[in-house]
Length: 99
Image (cartoon, rainbow, N blue to C red; front, side, top):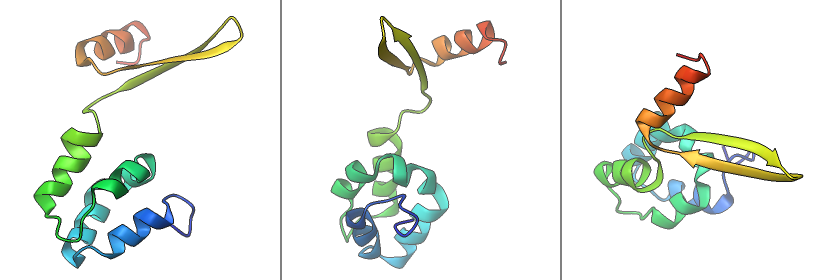
């Protein structure tokens, strides 16, 4: 991922310093999140980290369970909002005919 420009050298170095089974666990379960949260993840990774701590970092600590981002232009300025309420996301998708 580092050579593809998807994660920073700092994060690649931190991952390389982890136990092999933890590296594999991250690759198997959280590969997509690595590039999205690169700096925040790097700050959390320690050489002695456990798989349970990895789940906490990627799950509850960094990533919302479900999120919808809405972007628009208003008066020539880009605006956006992130919605995390599952019922509201479901209603918006329903209104858009996406479910």
